[in-house]
Length: 338
Image (cartoon, rainbow, N blue to C red; front, side, top):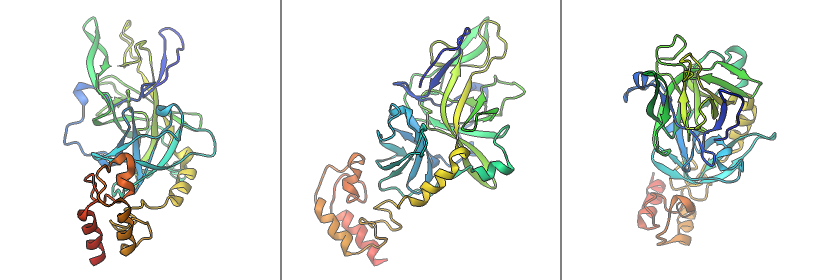
């Protein structure tokens, strides 16, 4: 995450990754969603980006995320983990104008759960402002409470990496120009707080802000950063620690509807993943499973170092067990038989 000072109490803007880092979701102890809470997108809609960020699944083999966790180098990629399984990036797409967002197609992916996109057409009839949203992200959760005069005013970020998915709720408070949106982190019991009030923290960059619209969870924002009065860059405040008056931190997201035209055009041109081009075992991506796919396996026959980093031997290790063997041939044979 990045930070820049404003004035005292100093307001610091932090991008949610470290190198600068990304954040995870911080929620109040009294209002942390229970383990069985399900009023949010499917967990498979959210992913981990490397070790310092998050991403959102928006197609069968497509994720969207920010660039700043890789030093604003859109071409610099990291392994993506969705639902416990690791994938490598195949291609990267960026908007024609400079931006911190990018779309990435993944090798060997065929997701059935993915988020819709909150479009400019949606905004025409239903603006994002004041909408309740669900935030999702991987990264640091709530640590120890921060007190003055025995009054809670915020929390430390927990000392952990981006290994756990967390969900929370909030409301979009305002837009910042056409391409950003903002929310604040209200204290527990505040009249403006959501039931499961939360905000972003480190390693949440690239995570999603979702609106339930027309019977579908749609991605409305992509977490960018937070502004806080804390000089430590590792805390979430909802009160001024000196006066104990309401002074909530704010979180910011890229406004997806601003980019929705480009997103929809990009999704339309991304080809299906090579291995899962409609049928498992379609290695050469011709939408058929036949002897040509069996021939493709020969190039990596008995290879034993297949991994997400090499695309599971460029798709030949179909069952992702680390090697190319008769087990992979069996998958193709079964598909041919069907």
